[in-house]
Image 1 (tube, rainbow, N blue to C red):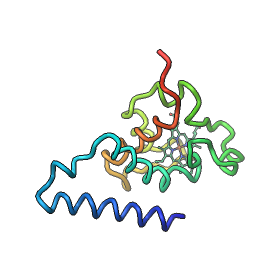
Image 2: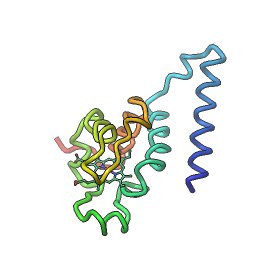
Image 3: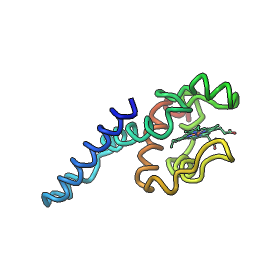
Image 4: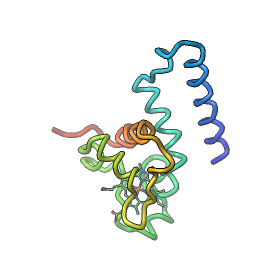
Amino acid sequence: MMQVVAVAEATLKRWFVGLAAAGMPFLAALTPAQQASEGQVLYVKYCAACHGQKGTPTRSALAQWPQLRPFSEPGFVQARSDDSIAAVTHSGVGKDMPARKDTLTREQMLAIARYVRSLGPPAVP
Ligand code: HEC
């Protein structure tokens, strides 16, 4: 599974680098939908082990951290900004959730944040 994700990520990267190198930086600029899919690839790689493929915490993660909430819970991540979710990825949470500031770029963290928010129902005003 991780191998498939790594290959998909590498393919995506090559594609964007290729577009940029071909003098088409405007095509390399991501639309929100594409960012969501880059976010999904990164989410699966860096977050799903604990938070689950679809944002429902895995059984083993819940056994360790019963306080984990599903991202689909109304008003949980939907009510938050992409920045605040990216900040969690950047710095981690206590000693339980690893910080990714040395692994991921800010753009990647924001792409993950958009994907995480897409896992929940729309915010209720
Ligand atoms: C090793 C397991 C683990 C991984 C991997 C992990 N998390 Fe977490 N995450 C946790 C735990 C545990 C908590 C709950 C901490 C608490 O509430 O005490 C948490 C909490 C959160 C929260 C809520 C924090 C808050 O301020 O309310 C968000 C958002 C979150 N994680 C996003 C992510 C994202 C995005 C990724 C991937 C980049 C990720 N997590 C990867 C374990 C993990």
